[in-house]
Image 1 (cartoon, rainbow, N blue to C red):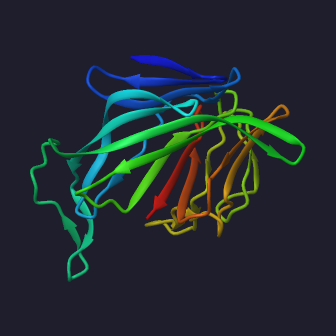
Image 2 (cartoon, rainbow, N blue to C red):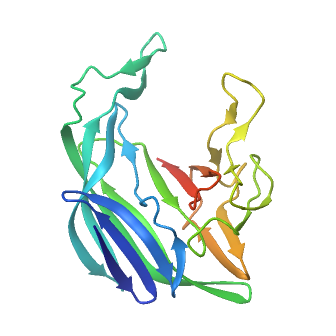
Length: 247
């Protein structure tokens, strides 16, 4: 099921099933799609002891400063491996029940607002978004922002500009083009040299794609400890972005 909400020139699709909020589907700015909606935009986080938060209940939608806030509860499920090592440096496996039951919940606000940004001689229309998480009594140590971004609603024909270590700085995507910023080497057992790349270091601090004279730019509000992967499989309409905000 889906529901469309408009904020000025911004249109967002809210995806739900019978009981849960699945995330944000298609997004359009001034009539131009910037997401296919093939994968829901939805954050993920976990605690050190392996409680994972990947399911949401939508409680309310509120207006705020010309934008909107989705008030949700993230349902915590015990994962099978904690982000801990024992004193022998072996992974700590969960000994809790493994039936996927909810063991706790936290409050998460998804805030969206229309915005404009002038860069040089060009003014861009778009929106800002942020996640506000109330975690007590649990302690999370990162938030993984997961979304696909595709100017025009399809990866085919988009040119990506990225200055980082994992791939060529300019790549135009065709139907059979695969793409990854994860740095790999010719080692058969584990070819991944650097899985997620730090922003403002080995990875640039913004996202840039264009087609037919139109650009889609993703900016961060401030510099921070963010590690990123951008990937696209051949034939996939989406370009997957993973931005891991580490606290």
